[in-house]
Image (cartoon, rainbow, N blue to C red):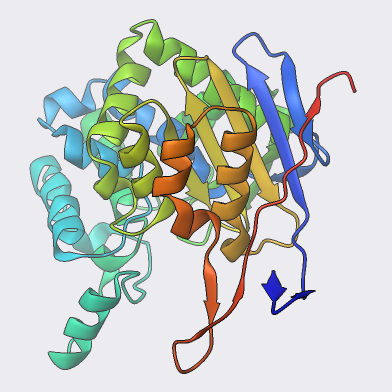
Length: 327
């Protein structure tokens, strides 16, 4: 981050770029750094909805499926979609175990305050994922109680997909608890990149499950995040050429079906503010987005730091040096 003419702070970036065959094609920092997949795992966690016939059984729309893959902004549109998933599955919103938090969308947050309302569980950015997990439980006849626990069949089903796509042994996956209460998965960054590369390749080749997930995410990018947020704006700008998902603590993953590549990125200090500049810097360095795409996303690539008066006083700037896998 630059303030005036001085570099005031730096965020170290680790990147792994793999192809679907598992070859490390490029890297920055340590591609084997171990961290948690966090919300970047959501497309894998949502895949059973398609492959187990849940989406067909409950007639979930692609927009609703995209919400299951998303970390949404809590707008009325997002809340309604989560409600619809639960209604179609015949599950009450009271079954959601994700705690409430203020919507990421500032206008929605302001509206709640003005109306004297408290945010609810449906405003949680992960309510789509949780609604999908409850639909999965209902479809299989599994108990909806404790669906967030690692021993529950819902979480076991998610873990099976994570193992399948990342290529890591189940016993090597570090289990933790995500911010929304469900299981999260720790592993080397390169395995996350491999998952996205394999997923991109499968989608390109017409594998029904991955293809439907990628189509949902790229057709309804506003349901994956929200207006003004990097996941939504990146997928909009590239018109479906990439699918992308942020994770907490500085994690970001991108799949590129046309090139059958997967990219996983970790900001070492976990800083959320560095994620968008870093991933856009990586994508442009690898020529996976055009100059026009990069220009359209300039405000994300070079975000201004504002003071309390709303004046720009600094700027984050991407400085990404990628090296070939064997360098």
